Image (tube, rainbow over all chains, first blue to last red; front, top):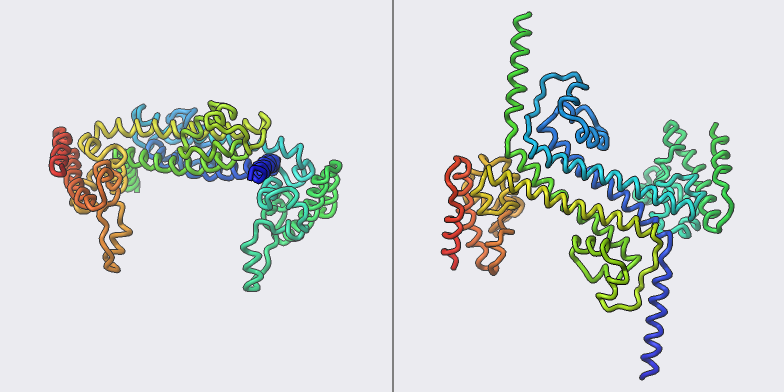
Length: 244
Length: 244
């Protein structure tokens, strides 16, 4: 009995150790990219509230600017008079609020600016860990898209064993299964759609470019996993030469 | 033509002035209570992420505490060793993270703490404007429930003209229309369900209490709208006497 107990305890300890050692950079990348995506949602939600609230005070300015970051930045820095002057409006439909009421609005704006800053810092963190872990993927796909690919598959290893054609449509699973079930047209791109290389061209070209880009990303991921040289620059040049 | 133009301009100006003067305390209350509710959502979303992230480092502590605020507060203040010691655990399944990786996690925790603080400040602001605008409603229903009632109807005036039986089930519209359509049981309470007076009793009593509370809230809202005396204390005593 005592021997069994000993074995059990030893086993427990070994399992715990295994769990402990299973934490790696892949986990950090998944957490960081999810955190960035969620902060995005949060910022949108709070910015909508901020706009609706500030609208009572200065509707003309609220409607003149669509960028959330700029909006929160400007209303905390400049007075209503300054902002209206820049728009060349001399009579505002907004009410004159007391300082007490305004402070509550500016407090919300400050929260949003803080969240933007946090998002930026997390992106910097993500960039620094990817620089060590998968420099080729980072350089070729970019920080956000590279991290999303890893986050979507779960780890660099799982990404690396995928064929290029799968990498091409990662994130477009819904369209893919609709294609398989109903025979609608198959998706041409998933997460990589937002890559500069695909965005910068016209619609008819995008499918071809997505295939070529996915090819190179698959190579980059494999080289990174086996700790090869830095070849992303060369891969990029090949891509550009192909679609000149 | 010139006369028409003059009339048009005068009209425009009058309309703008009307819009300007239509902003009142009701608007602030609606915005503030919505802001608080949305901050709640945001905190939940980010806290879930924080827990998942921190789990890699210290799973034992993460699972030992369910309060989001306490969790964020403790992990930023105390070291892993301290936290584990308090739980009397000597071998953790969590990995040892580098400072660089930990900082990213703590950064998220700080954002969450900031948002909690912001929520508290907005509640204080809400309390101060309700103290002036509707002291009876605030005292009787509480800051959050009172503000939700105003936010739900749109203004104190609209709340004031409702019969007590409608106030009782404000916020339970879905159940009400299901009752009308399918004949299921009607709702007994809406927003006011979360009031201490209803929460502190057993289930069979709650319907009766909700009706009595809604009666008194209707009275309080009317008195507040017509700027009457402070009678909330008396109303409260009447309620308590009735359900002794």
